[in-house]
Image (cartoon, rainbow, N blue to C red; front, side, top):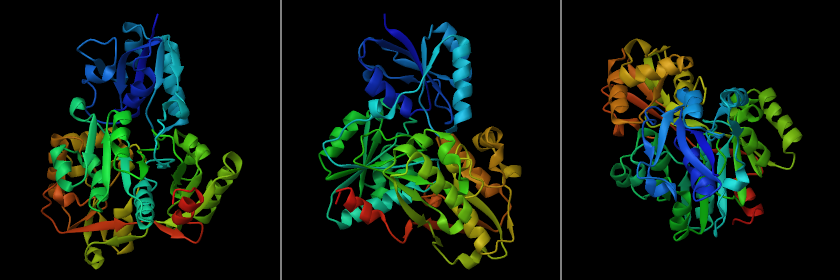
Length: 440
C-alpha cells in the first residue's frame, strides 16, 4: 500500500517536492500539507489539477503547523517530510522529535532528487540565509551574461500565496504584469528589479512547466533562489552568498549549510561592514567543508534616491525588507545603515502605532525591535502597513526595501529610498567565474 505522507512546508518548496517526487508515484499518498512562516496560507487546498492521479476534487488540504501531532494521528501519517527553509538545525530536529514522538518517520529529501535538469545552461544564485544579498548578486550575474550577448531568463523561487490554479506558471515582463498577477509586496520586491531592466522572470507552482516555457526564450537560465533554499534546477554553476554579519550561520542553518557545501562559488558579501574575524570564520568553514569553492569578496554599497543629508538630525522611521527582519533574524538592514551613516537624530520605534496584521507580525517576531518590516502578503496587511506608517510620529521615512514602496503604499511623509548593488572587491569576480564555468 502507498505510504501516507504529510509535507511540512511554507507554500514553496513543499509544493515543488510533491510535484517532482511524490506526484504520480504509486508508492506514496500525500494526505496533507502544513504551513508556517507566511501568514494566512493555511486553510487552503493544493488543487486537484496539480495533484496527479489518485486525488479527489478537494485536492490536498493545507493545515497549520501547530496541528502537527494531531494530524499525524488523525490522518494516519507514516512519513512527515520537512520542506521549508531558513531554520536553525536545532529547529529542524525539534520538529523531527515531534514527528517521531507522534508515531511517524521524519524525512528530508535530498537536493539531487528534487532538481530538474534543463536543456539550457543554468546559473543558480542561492544563499546561506535570507538577506545575504542574493538579489544584487543575481542582478550582477544577469548584467554580465547580457554583456556577453546572452538572452537571459530568470526563474524565481516560488511565492504562491494566492489562487494556486492561477499561479501554476507566471511570466513577468513588465510592471503591468505584476498588477495583472496581483503580486504581493514580497513578490514585487523580487520580480520588479528584473522587469525594470528588461529581463523576463518566471515563477509559480509547477516548476517543470515553468522551465519548459522559459527554455523557449532563453540562452541561459538564472535561478533566483529564495530564503536559503536549494535550487529547483540542476545548476551548471552554483553561486551561494554568505553573510559575515551572521558568521557561523553558514554551518548552523538548514538548508543553507547544504548550499554552502555544494557551492561552486561562494560570494562573501558585506565585506565593507563586517569584522575581519567574521570574514575569516566563513573562510575557515569553507576550508573545512568545501575547500574547492571559489571565493568572491564583495560589498553592497548603499546610495539614496535623493539628497541623503535630509536624514541628518531627523527623527526617522526605517522600513526594511520584511522576510530579512522576520525569519531572516537580521536586526539591521540597508535603511538602518543609511540612517546611521547620515546622522539621524533618532530611529523611531513604530510599535506604539502598529495595527492589525502588522501588530501580529511583531507578536510573532518580537526580535524585530524598533524597525518596521515591509510586510504585504495580502491586501489587509498592506492596508495595515500604510496605516502604521502614516500614524508614526516622525520627520522622515527611510525606505530600505528592494522596490519603491511608495508605488504600493500611500506614504504621507517625506521619504528617502535606499539603493544598493553588488560590488566585487578584487578578483576573482562574477565575470571570471562565468567564464571559468563555460557559461560565457
